[in-house]
Amino acid sequence: MSYLVSTRCKLYYEDTAESDPSAIDKPAVLFVNGWAISSRYWKPLVGMLSANYRCITYDQSGTGKTIIKGYNPTFTIQGFTDEAAELIEHLGLQVSRKLHIVGHSMGGMVATELCLRYHEAIVSATIIACGIFEETPYTFLGLFFLGGLIDFSMNFRNVFHLEPLKGIFIKRAATKEISKEYHDILLEDFTQSDKNATNAVGRFSIDREALRTYTRHVLSLSSPLLCSVGMADHTIPPEGTITLYERRKAESEAPTRIAKFMEVGHLPMLEETAEFASELTKHFEFAEQFYKSKP
Image 1 (cartoon, rainbow, N blue to C red):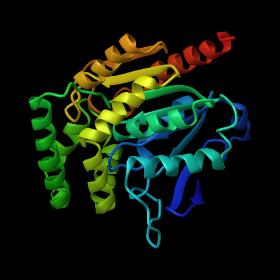
Image 2 (image 1 turned 135 degrees about the horizontal axis):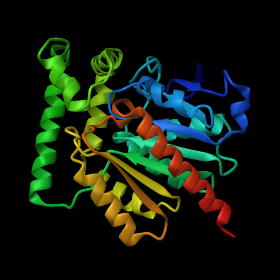
Image 3 (image 1 turned 180 degrees about the vertical axis):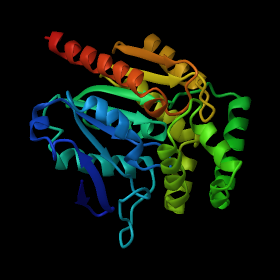
Image 4 (image 1 turned 30 degrees about the vertical axis):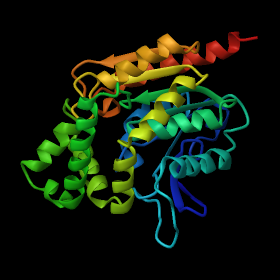
């Protein structure tokens, strides 16, 4: 458990190499969080992967233990990418092809930018529940209503401590049952996240131009990509991730794979941890062999 001080913030991160020095020589995995959540929800997954991988998690500005008071961070895709980039370089992960990046939900947008920036260091990319959609009037109407839901959620977020709204909040995130510990973590993170950061992230996640840029960039990634989706996701429709996979398969020469989790919602790392860890491991191993076989 450490802090990295930058012009943006005092960034809290955890690196399994701190408690296990042998992890320095293992392939590294950087986990990029979704909207209004700290890095704590990765812990069960890290526990399963850390025997073979150096796992790094961190709290983005506006969440968890990262300190922004007295700093002036920008809450944009570029700002969050710069923040993660400083951590990558602080840990020296940009110097060799040993880095896997896993981005969840909004974190998929940041992960994509990191993969473009450090394309010579990246072994693989994994995007969880951060798809693309065809631009139709129906899609834009859905984004409009989602923007309204974000505004409502932020203005009245303390009501989610009360039942039945607490149960509704959790069920929207996780379709399958998760432990009470993580019920409480998800709710605490959401209600205590910085309001300005959370609003900004919610807005750029549904901004049309930001989504168009994301589509172009994810299609241009040269590293192997895993698209992971819970088919019972009530937060972000799973069709978007399937469309992303199909577009990549059709338009990119880089390897693209998909992992579908039936009856799973927005949080496969908590809802089916072992199965998700297995899919990630297969993807990491595939990508490592892909680069070894290249001339």
